[in-house]
Image (tube, rainbow, N blue to C red; front, side):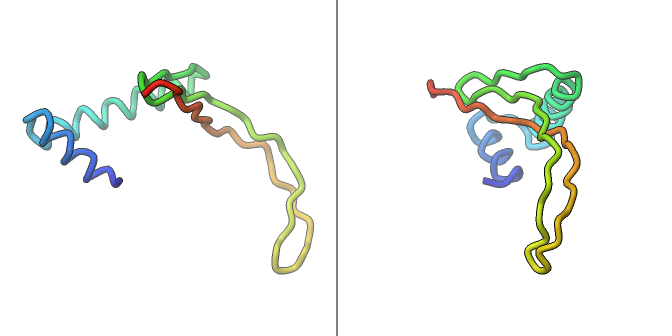
Length: 85
């Protein structure tokens, strides 16, 4: 489902204007992003937990040439899905 489809569905269910739902969505995204950058977990009831994580540095391979590549450590987000929904 795309962001636009999600916002349209939320408008239909809530009766709110699209611009209000979109502003709320953008504020929610920014709040989640800020918490994750601060190293905090974000729990979303019925969905799961978003946790900041680090991928370790590793050696990869170029599939066309087979040449070894150094892949650096990377910060990412892990979703642990809720069992209750």
